Image (cartoon, rainbow, N blue to C red; front, side, top):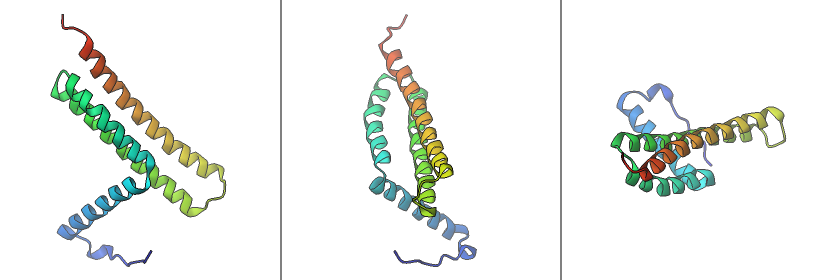
Length: 131
């Protein structure tokens, strides 16, 4: 891996927007390539979203599910960033490093609970006949 110098002082205006977009897309590509949890969550959402779209009583409810799915992916990216930073410092066992990784993992789990709750509401509500 070659180190390149990045001059933050020159990274302003439209150039900043272009670079930020490029860095974001590189991060997404890397997450898909390197992070199995990210790929698993993407696959899960490809299964959950169609049923959510089918049973959702309104566009707003479906958008809530879609936003919750994006929240999970966002938290997963942050968790992966925490793990990469901790691993860069050292691979030996450290109680504080374990805490950082466990907290990141717990945050992903909590965001998955949000998706599960919204999806369950949509699907179960879709099976209840209107009064």
